[in-house]
Length: 503
Ligand SMILES: Cc1cc2nc3c(=O)[nH]c(=O)nc-3n(C[C@H](O)[C@H](O)[C@H](O)COP(=O)(O)O)c2cc1C
Ligand SMILES: [Mn+2]
Image 1: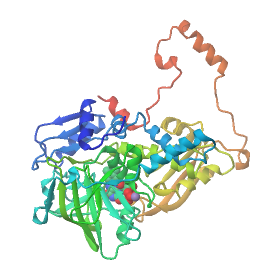
Image 2: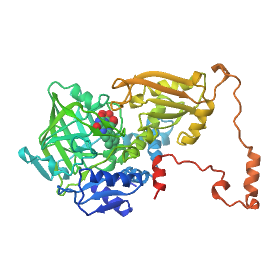
Image 3: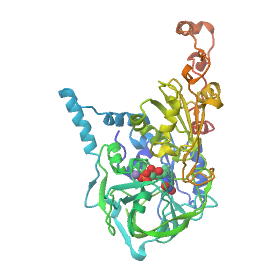
Image 4: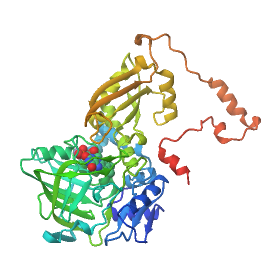
């Protein structure tokens, strides 16, 4: 099934699938929406369309990505791993062998060529054009998420810039603190591409912010692509059709034609403002820090535009599934660089950068340590604070199993690596911001060259007896299903599923 073409068809799909509740009661975007959403997300509940947010005539959509099912619906796939398979196919293209191979190769190349964004003359995003004094961000139902937040924040934007050196486009998701009717802060963290575009500017950089996109394009704004890759190209590839762009009204940038709302404007190189505090996905308030000021020169929108939002906070929050989508979609790219990696898991409770569990096909002494250092050198994964390495047969998504091997296979004097490196901009734990300690735990089985005594054999029942018990099961009169299948009563992968069981 093709992913939805815009926010409206996405909302219609959610409604048809029983995945959306329209809230008709008047609700305050100041804290009240957060409390409702947080309870709904943690219970695995539906997307919410607040039709009458207090103080605004624009409806507010939230929790569109709050469950695995909705994340998959939004990306148009059955399972998140299906996307990885498609990407792997393209990434691992080999020179074609025969005619059939050539035709297949051409199809793949076409899928890449068709991913490039296309420009059109008109788009619904510009049905209404407000400039000058008519620009007024307070028309939008922008949430103040948490009690100590400095102001209302735009939380689900796709921020578009061009690299002043080569014109390459970048799209990223960066929170925006409302300063007044037509200015906001721009939270470009130190490791991000948006920040790099800004730093490469002499004076002024033009910026466009798209709000209310089709789910694929919204997702790609959060995807950690290398600097030179346009996020809109990934969006086109995932959608199976190009993203359509229209030229902005007051600046020289193209913006998604299907957006509900677009903010056009600019940032001056050295104009900074105090940004924060903001209750972020770390589960803590991030302290106030200087960030650039965004001046809005035009606000364009659809008639009856719908404003999209997201609440982050203590995990699990709605961003859990955006992160899980990235984990799954980027596995082939990770494997391209480190092919011995079988799978990896970034626990939601570890807010993605605090912990990475990785399974490897171990082939030589010290291999687990090699992989730790590879992770600490790989794109945004380099910010990972703790890496746990297990053998290929361990299911990295089964935390009980992982914990078993960490307990059973680790001699801390031999298997723990303490290192140093860059850390997430928002990590409050390190003594210095941006930089600090790294922890690696090698929970693989050790070989003789790694200086150990002979490693014992793991307990496994013989195939023969398992087959016998399968055959005879009914004779035993034990009726518990889980026991019959020999499956352990596993804790499910994500904390989200545990929350779901509460209802
Ligand atoms: C809901 C949400 C909010 C985010 N807020 C910020 C933010 O305020 N600042 C930031 O630098 N990154 C933020 N991120 C992460 C970036 O969107 C992500 O790192 C992305 O890859 C940045 O794009 P870039 O690599 O092209 O700069 C956020 C992600 C999500 C899902
Ligand atoms: Mn980027």
